[in-house]
Image (cartoon, each protein chain N blue to C red):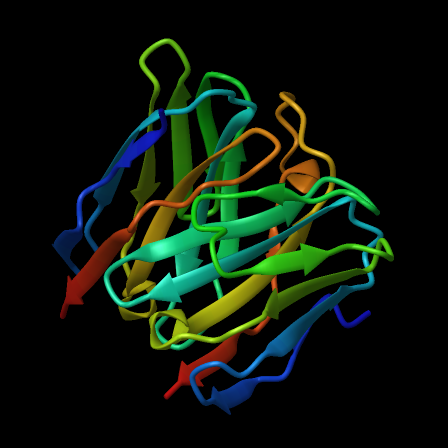
Length: 107
Length: 119
């Protein structure tokens, strides 16, 4: 079967660093994507890990360990505009999303 | 370059009515997807297509049908709408996915969504 686990909510302070973990179990696997969704908006792509290791894109980094079926999204220098839901999404031919992690940022 | 567009943006149906949601993309993507999003449930995959003329079931396909007659269009049909189908529907498209490290081939582009209410 397929399963996807990430925390439902995370709270952090503006300017801090936060890590959102994701564990997955899928029948097939090409890589792991991360998406951001603001309230009322559509999901937007943040990063993709096709290989083990760390991918860095500005303030955001994403990590993948295929052997552990585990990944995380690291957000640095948090800004109020980062308040959103974050989804990890393992993909093969289909892309499955979980329930996402709601990130609350305190001033 | 419009990206992914969805028609209509809003719709209200009565139980038992039928309708078709249209998704169009102008990026020459092979893969297209339909998701529904309900409060607290994240995004759930309804159906997807890996190329023109092909469709496959996702996580929650019951009550929906799809067609991909042209590469750029992916239609989602509700034959007999039910209140449980009240949701926000998102269409998305992407290139063929593969196991390499390139983000550009694995980014999924989403449409703006269709808010459907079934009374």
